[in-house]
Length: 175
Image: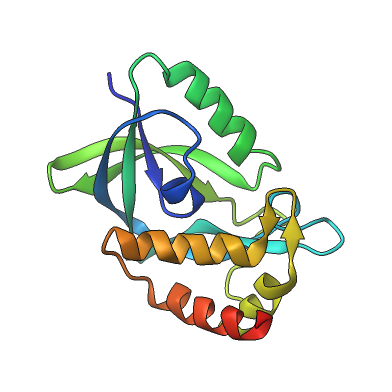
């Protein structure tokens, strides 16, 4: 059986696993949001950054990609994704139905745990921009994460108005 992974943030542009196929996809009941404080990849414990997570919202949906793992690489991919995404246990691993133009697929999906200490849903966009503009973590500047995500969304024909606003504001703050 094929292993699919839903990408909505850095998995869009840096999956770090062999991808056999990609499809545009939409996940109902969740929205993409900078609602997770990053203390490893894009910030530190002393100066947390922000990373995207899927925050539950029955009225929302999130557009992204489903990535089919190259056959034979499923076990290694799962282990590497768990090491990357579950580093602080703020994400929950879920198998969710994701809609594509070729029908629904079940996809491994990482969503935020709203009870985790790193959850910070509802931060005003201006506060998000201030944090993203200055935070740096083990994988580099928080601003780079935002800019690469927006650029890749645009490359695949998707637009997230909040992320576009953040990109423009953060670009101004770091200029």
